[in-house]
Image (cartoon, rainbow, N blue to C red; front, top):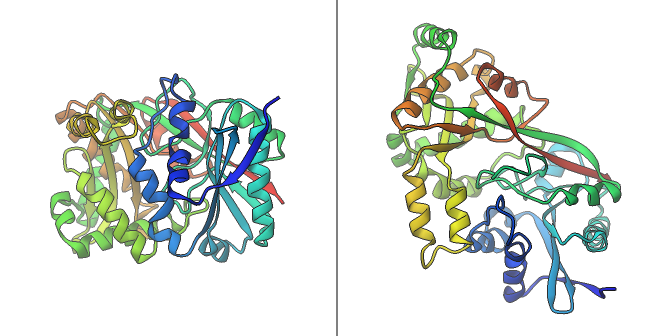
Length: 372
């Protein structure tokens, strides 16, 4: 019987082991999409969110071999906003051994209790920006680069340990080359005329720091009341996200809608899929990872719908028709064939918009919750 030992991860060389563990765990899994190691190192050691969040990391060892990992987090801004005493867990990966999973989650739970927390939920990131939600359906599919993948046994382990469903996120796959319906096109035209709305230029947005800031202000406002567990960004987080996201935005498949005063009303942001490129890169930009990623960023055959939303005062006026119609035109020009939606809470009425198109459920992912 293995003699498992859990250790806290503090040294940089151990953080590297923590980051590399999934590479071995999923080596023979054709669906798994490895994150870039450099990005993971930054996320675990040097992001603005760590200015106010607490986090601890642990690995389970079998001798010198890593067989499991977990990160425990406490976001005080979340707890203040929702009047909770919650910790969260993420970076949860384990071999197919219940003993390892129990050791990992028991350790994270004990730490949470020592910090005065009464609940723990996950898998989550520090805030709303990162990968979240344990996969419960769609194991046969390759996830978008910003989504988690896990083996089915993960769910069995956490439920055996007393975790229950807090919420599910749904993702849909849709043909992107069929355009929108006549009804949507007609409605989009009516909205444009009635409210003097027009399409903005993303290249102009990217070059204007004030417009970028407004974009993220709108993002904060548009999701504050519609996304479960949403945590508004700090100024530092906005700056960090702008640096990482804005260079990849393109008029080719994305759309922003402005009013007559050129104020942002709604947005639909799409990225070309880079999941297969990341599989080829195997966690590294060099020596050839950059080539695979650069090639993927120019190929719009498969796209991921990253962000879709509207300013609160526009959310009940059907402005999604405008950016859907706009993006469908762009998809046709770019020879885009398939689109995967971003994860959306199943209880959010916005998820019903995909019913207007041919679609199939692509993935379902779950946030689990446990009382401590």
